[in-house]
Amino acid sequence: MINRRFIEELSMFLKSLARWSATLGLAGSALLGTVLGAELPVWALTEQEIQERLQSIPVFTLTDAQGSPLVATEGDDSVAGAFISLEDAEAFLNNLQQRNPDIGGQVRVVPVALSDIYQFNNDSAEQNEDVTFAYVPMDEQVQRAQSILQEDNPSANVENFRGVPLFIPRSAEQEGYLTIEVEGERFVPFFFEEEHLKQQVGDMPVDIEVVTLEGVIQAFEADDSEADEFLKQILLVPSRESLQFLQSTSQ
Image (cartoon, rainbow, N blue to C red):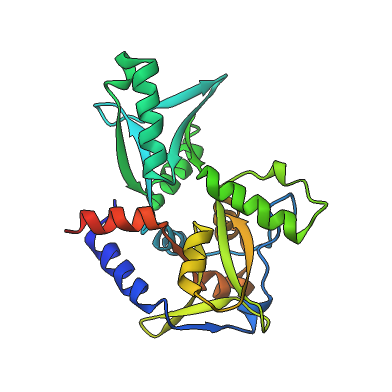
């Protein structure tokens, strides 16, 4: 569930984005690995901490009138989509309504918190259920991620990129990720949009690192207390479209 408390926290976060600095030490040296096949480091957070980091991110699903997710079945597996973009979810629904009005007329777009999707997938795995949610990225952001990765490593096969890209600003002048201050604490922002990142850092010279949402969640779940402090600094920043949606629901 996306509630007013998270929206208020996001509003405070937005007001703090101007207070950037470079962070050194663990945040400056910790790596999330590449998105093209390298192993992720073994890091971990508690279940509650993972939920807290995911619950302020809205995603958009398609459900029927009874609230059951619309699924695509392949063999024994049934997969439902959790769209990062509301516009993409609505476009998918419009297309479905044109191709199959009988089914499309019974389906609607429903916003849910990313933490709820995460919990659903965990429960489904524990109970050996067949239905899972797959995250559906924004095509434009995938292309931007591929471009950054290709520039960083011209020999990389970026066509193999899979997942929802996240963009992390690093200081171009000194070693370390950029951080922002929220209520006296410093966080490393992970953006769902490259353009949003650039908009927020302004003229500050930065390098951009690309990881995936799926890889970050795996890192959250892994088991090694030594890097917990960096994981606790990660702050997922909703897309501008999602922020507008959250702000509209709070009015």
